[in-house]
Length: 532
Image (cartoon, rainbow, N blue to C red; front, side, top):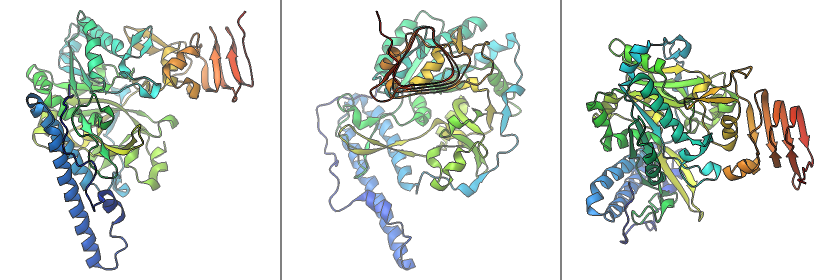
């Protein structure tokens, strides 16, 4: 499980090392203000020395942590910490997270193909290609953004069905329809594993094999000392000292679990990876057929689904051509002076859905050849007792440049339906979508294919508060834009059309009555509906 409990204390150097402020050495001494070449050289030598010291101290702390792990679990822990040390070494070597903006090239004409150009395989052919596929769902996240403490995948989104329920039902439907054997693999974290193990027991009678593995567990680093906060490996007792290092950890953890070898030896050739909370990320037969039917003449080891960028996606990743390779570009990697360019739909028209298809044998090759080069991103956090820490993370899409025959497929927006906040939940629970065989489909009664823009205020942020404010989710088939702010509640059978703005100022409350129809309306002030 990645949780090792012990009562031993290590000799961790959490308190820091006297006379050396490592982080200050990195930030302030950049050599730019040196008067001569000798001073610049001395600065570089100093930076190299402090980096070597930081790595040595880190390795010493990791060894102390490793000694707190029970002997029978130590080898697995050693693999885990080796991955952490490799992240740390990259972190020290990277001058920054940012790319060289001038090296970004125009996307080649064959880098992206339109989904509409794909052919649909015949029914008899579908089984043969499905039998080569493994579905992987990234299931390590908590529902903290919606006020939950448990796995996000257990949130009920439609008809009391959770993300996990819908995922399992979708794959079971495929297996029954085509007499195939597509397995489901869940990548959990130490935050979600225990509860997930309990939940998946209820799926035993279904026609789908479910496997789980845990991603790595890395120690959070003090921003000041650049050393781990943890003094032992009792993760349950000190969860704030540990973190799962992003979904880029999939490759090594999948391999270390033994599942990668198991599936390759069983004849599986590709995996489809997506976030558990993306309800649009279903198995697409057309994309799978594209990959498999051209495997010999034009092998595609890595295919990423992208969709047209909108103003709502300005912070999301995109694909670029960089140093003659397709690669993923995230906002955190953009130089500050080019952030507005990155957000522009004019310059970057595609948005990363994080739906990815990868050849299993190619994953094994890149790991064996040690050429899976992922950029390490620094994610700053603050603990509950106000300690500033950093997490070293990687993205699954960052591996794009490490594979041969990479390709982007410009998919319809329906392939990207994530639920990150309660306003997303509002959309997927509404009559905007219908549920068929566990697949969410936009209602044919919707006159246009785009989804409404919905902005719900702070009173709706937590999921329990969200449900209390709706007797029933309103009819939004004709809605374009909704903004709700303040203490607002909705009755039954409410209909919202066009642009609707509802604002209850501080100390005021607005109750939208049962059966109300609001079309192109602004509602403000005080409106109380008293029960009698």
